[in-house]
Image (tube, rainbow, N blue to C red):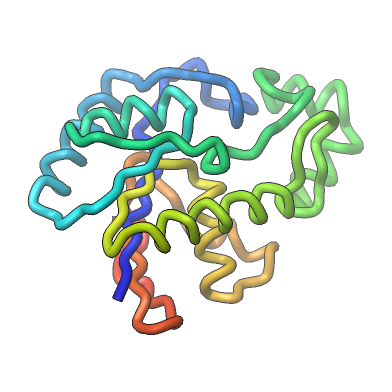
Length: 190
C-alpha cells in the first residue's frame, strides 16, 4: 500500500485574494502561519518517508513548518495564469470580458494568454504526484488547490468540469491510499 497526504498551502496574505496568483509568490498571512504550525502538530507522529513542495513561497513556508527536510518540484505549482497573473477578477471582467465570461462558465476549458490550460496543469500535476507516490510508501505533498483537484479527478475518474465540487480549504489535508492500483480517498480536505 502507498499513501499520499496532500496539503493545500496555508492561508496567503489578504492582498492576494480576488487576484490571479497561480505563479506569483505570495507569503502566508499570520493566520496562515498559525495554520502551518497546527499542521506540523497534526502530522508530527505520522510515518512520512518524503515531503515534496511546490516552489511557490506560500507552499514552501507551509512545508517548512513541518520541520522536516523537503524537496521542491516545480510541477506542483498552481495554474499559470500567464498575462493574467496579479490582476484582479474585476480588472479581467472589465478588460477581457469575453475570456472572463468563458473562464467563469467553463473554467477547465480556458487557456490563459501566455499561460496554461487546466489540461496542462493536470498533465504535469498528475506526473509529479505519481512520481512522489512511486518514491515513498508515505509522502506528504504541499501544493495548491488546483493540483490536488487535478490528482483527485484523475484517480477518481471525474470529468474536468466536476473538479470544483471538491472543496480545498487552506491547509486542508487530503489522504489517498492505494490498495494495489486502486486509489481510496480516506480523508478529503480534513
